[in-house]
Length: 156
Image: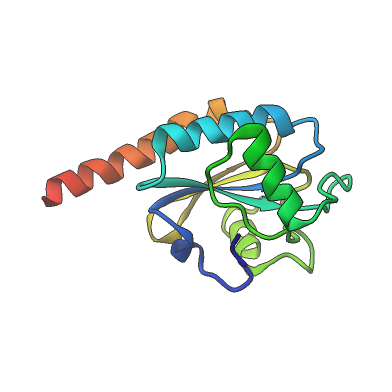
């Protein structure tokens, strides 16, 4: 588990990341966790990671401790992506990483499972709300990862 309060996003992982505010007791939990893990399995971890940030701001749907949240995600969905400590993702208490995501996109989370695609150098590419499935955004993620792989191949 990683504390994320002051990190620049580019330092959090590979060149492409999908940053998601997760919750264990949301109507979107099952479909999103399954799809996020499939995306992680298909594209990670060298060029891509899902970065999961538990948040209890919306509907009090993430009430457990950090350890319980991580255990739930790992045991129930086989989650292999990084799980961060529970944080605030909107409003005055939002951590700097989410303030940056919000400032970069003009999109502030209003519910669980908002998704921000972050490309090379920490540049935010796009944001999607909870109602947009991971399957719908997979082409954006795949294209970014493909570009990185081709660029690395050209550099060899």
